[in-house]
Image (cartoon, rainbow, N blue to C red; front, side, top):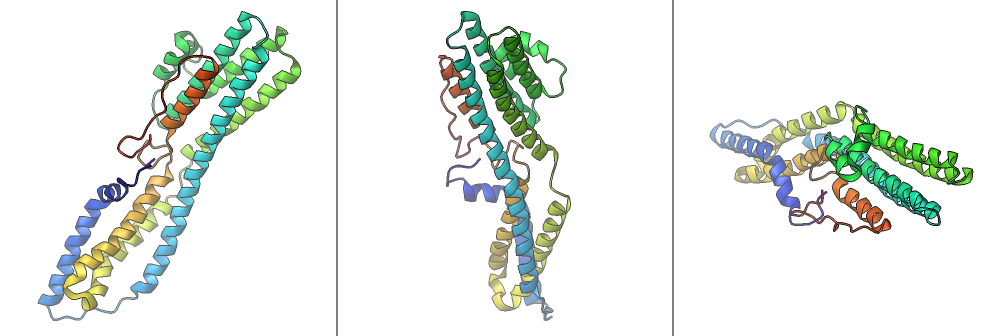
Length: 296
């Protein structure tokens, strides 16, 4: 996620410079043809076409941003649920034996591993090293071969609490409270997976790209009569606006693609890591800071 102002224009130029260069060359060619060949260009209804295109691009961008914001909201819910689980677990086991303390540590570390595993799954990465680094190879072996390691870790947390209930370490009311928190975690994960696995319809990608590029091709033909030699500059600047809108919509469609415009999963995982490790009384790492204006 871009958090600084210095990279915004630079990032847009980096993303659209190739089609923008092709557009500028086309604008120069149209302008040169206009002055070299005494042929009047046909009047084009670009004002009406441009208005319809702007509405289409705006609708597509709003739909893409709604996906991005929902993803951010679900991660916020996961942060809250992780804190709640750690707080409830420590509260239920605080006045009990050292074995209960080991139980609380096991649960909280598994929740931390779950968060990092979910981050890797959403980004299409292998979460095994992150899981081993947090809970060790024994727990990683328990979920070996599972297609959804994050959900498998959630199941192990539920099993630990079920065993604690059977052993009389917690009562049924406490178990119910914990299960509600685990349901909230599962719901947040399910919402993220829905966004990750359900792309916007292909028409949201194909038609805006087609019509925006067609508009940019026709634009210098309509402007050359009034702008004359300045047509390449005016047409290219207008084209930059439409190409930037296309690029922004494309970036927001997949909020977990690990790009500069995506939800900062690594930073939010670090936030959860800090909170949970400090709850256990362990040293915690520093929060992640933006790298060249981008928070990952």
